[in-house]
Length: 399
Image (cartoon, rainbow, N blue to C red; front, side, top):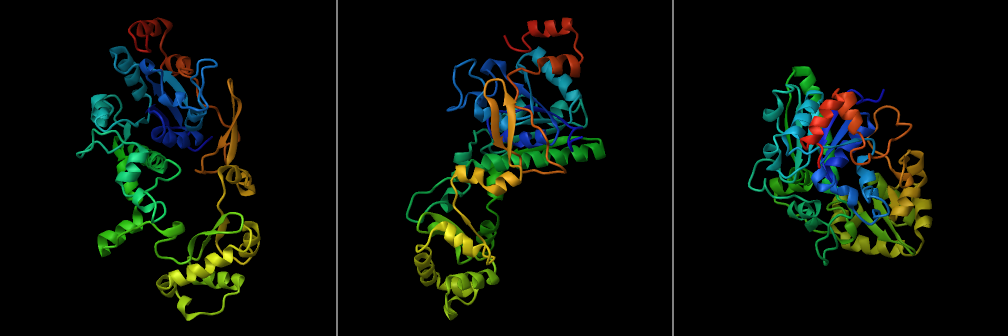
């Protein structure tokens, strides 16, 4: 049995951040029942290009496959009385209600604990929003790109003489998903222990600010002003950055004095009092980096790694995505998995990095829209054919 096989989550989720969080719960065995609004043709992630087209129904993008592996889908119109009835029946059979909407929407849609506790006192209502459900920005939409700018990330990313830059990946969204998944599990644990559920008010804004970590502490406590650094250099450790070799780039980092001594040995550098300690190397960083940059240009990346890795110097190539996915360690760690899909055939994607016990032997693809209608209505909720017909006629499942 998978670790979370006894947890059921009703997910009013869409696009990236929310589905990314529940993806890892699904891989660990939780039953994620994904509620998709029939009036908008379900999760907008189903239609994200470029790998989505109109060859058939056009509803199964590879973007959607990435974030919804292992879940179930039910088309349900929560704006109707009949749709709300089905939703409330699901709440009675669930451990958590999970959503990622604008901050003012969960109360309007009655997805909070005060709205649902009469149905299930142990229900955990986990709301991941852009800015949270309180504060002056609560009603604003929150997107990863905007939050990277708002939370200071872009001011720290890129070359000093270039424009502010975002991360190449949607790291606020993905980190927010992890925060939401962790909070949901903590909430379910507490609800089972205490017999009472709760609200979990989570936001991408809080996530982005929380990830400022030690630069925030330095600024708030000592007045430090973070800046963009040349060649992605660490703000205080020298050397710890990318270096250009004859045929590409590599990262070399000396986070301990022993690593600097090993690097100096590989490069054949003489003892120099200017570079003796962390403080010395930071004080004389311009002189030191000029020496190192000239040295690294003389050989290929592979040649440098062949010397640096056996010497115990922390280092690695700057891979492109193809090289990262083909790295022998990627394969050895089981980080590439496959599912079978009726439209795409074999879909190959990355696994969840969350490991609890043995890794799953097989993975289930993302659901087609409303694929699990019969399972949810008949098997889980025990509705009769007559009741299902009545609900359908009342618009519970869309037009």
